[in-house]
Length: 254
Image 1 (cartoon, rainbow, N blue to C red):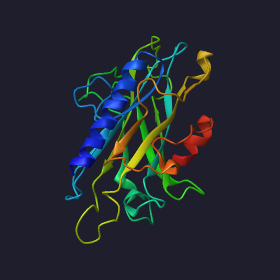
Image 2 (spheres, rainbow, N blue to C red; image 1 turned 120 degrees about the horizontal axis):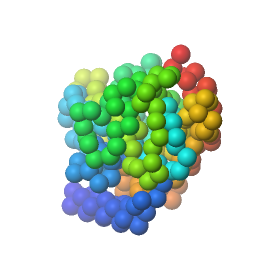
Image 3 (cartoon, rainbow, N blue to C red; image 1 turned 45 degrees about the horizontal axis):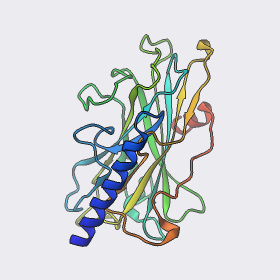
Image 4 (cartoon, rainbow, N blue to C red; image 1 turned 90 degrees about the vertical axis):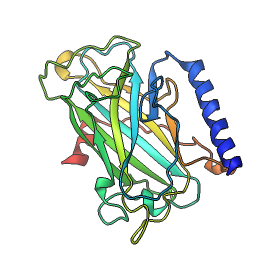
């Protein structure tokens, strides 16, 4: 137990050191419970898998690049990789899988907190998140999301370069973690990587969409721990996703 705790602390210190070196650069951030700088922010989430109630909240944010004059939507792609060779049942969240599709859900309302970063959406955005497998990747899965303001919404405005902006909350609940019918693998270690956020702007604005792939501070977090020394399964080994069109993402939710 002490060895595992020591590894977790060492990892947290390493990630925070990386954060300090990159602070202020445009790009992506991912954290548990808040964006970097918040009192609740963490890169490691541990859960005893002893209850089926409650949620674990991933928060995605970004430091705005130049050229955001009218942000209307974000397209989000995250990958989950577990420490073993096969994805556990607990991380399978869709119809026909061990855990229901509702085990992962998007939340884009920051009016009740946290308040560390800028709440651009101001409770006006709608969206969703969904889980999917990754073909030919036995120990990985993907979570995709879309969040958008309605067309013509007065909240569609510019974001000054360098502003740290909330993009999404991704809630992963604790259903089927223990007891009769529990899904195996809740306690298995996992690495969660925010691969990309695409900032979309209305065609009428004349401004292009802007994809972000790289970390501003830290774009990956840990579930339970990350102790594997196998070079095949290091965290992160995930590669950025290819650019996709706004239409192809929206089709996931029709």
